Amino acid sequence: MSTKTLVAVDEIERVSEQLRVVGTTGIEPRCIVEFSGLYLVQDTSDGCWYMGQMRPDGLIHCWAGYGDDLAEAIEGL
Image (cartoon, rainbow, N blue to C red; front, side, top):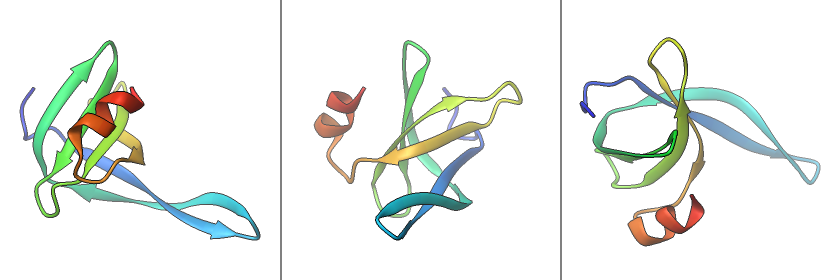
């Protein structure tokens, strides 16, 4: 998959013992790997891996981060 694909990552905030999405941030992908409809995307700026799905408009929307450990990210699939 092209690294020109648009990718957005949820910004999460803890509020009273609960997590909530407070916005999204675009990232520049270094690598994108697809596994049965789920995507792992590595961020160019910090090397972190994020998991998400492709929306109908072609944007990959990520909701989970796995740090820079690809093996941990793959286990999360």
